[in-house]
Image 1: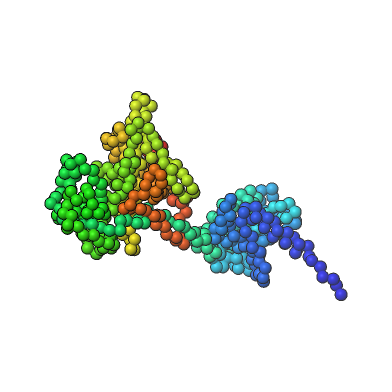
Image 2: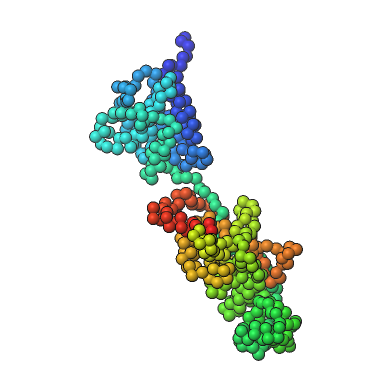
Length: 442
């Protein structure tokens, strides 16, 4: 009885497979050998993003042909391989990408071609002959990009696409955590809001909102039965209601009155550090008396961060201040699925002295808005959300009529490759972007 023996060709064949696996692993990708019955495919390569290891969902089928002798028609620059009609017909069927890898394990040489691409021309297909260029077709780590191109075509049968990318989307809707529990209404002889404030000033009375004067009635979160409100309305006519009757009302007028009370509450809550600019229709950080730049700390997605919210630009030519820039936001209260939110739309205000609007407000604002990226806007939204959501402390007592919670966030099972959407600028655009960046950095 003859003893069983492993053949030299079997050993060389396995050494060829091992060489392929070593190269694939050095690429940072995955080699999956065929472990069941095979009829012409020795395994597959699953490509992964170098450095991160992120699976790209691109799979290449591999047929290995190893030898320890010379390749067919070998020279210093090239060699050939003649495919049989039977194996070529098998490799070319279907639409999965198939690589033919010829190797010489003893010298650590390996070369590859993508068969469907190589035999795409009928004339070449008829010859069944593959000509390998030892430089261009070398199978090593540097071949990754070409492998990616070979396997990433839409008509490739095993192109699965990248794995599902889940993302947590942070909106610019800041939840209203609480508002005043009661709304008070009383009859008044005043007919215009200006009359209310003029009468208060004439009597040296300081009034603070929120308050709405409409149709001979005062509506407020303040108890109108108390001083100083009794000076402006009929105390005996005061009625109070659960605020939910306004907040969830189907009546448009009541809903608008509630929004007005919220906006007036927001003004009071932010004053005096942040003021409402009626001419710009936004809230902005107020300049300090010395007009020195200042920053605020806020809780970002990665912990505590700092942002300069008031700064200035000094002309290199004259040494004078060209403008002051105030971080600002346009705010609107929105009702969504039974919850009230403050919509935060970041913007900027440019002044010449910390108060008077710059003549170049429109141009400067447009320059920033054109070239700000999503990350820039996100940081501003997070800063404002953190600033608005600050609670009670020794310096800032809690404002009783309005408090905020968290930004509305949504978890989705689809994501966007931000790098793929990055804008590539031409020379002129780059110059304009530099100008805008100067405005942003200052």
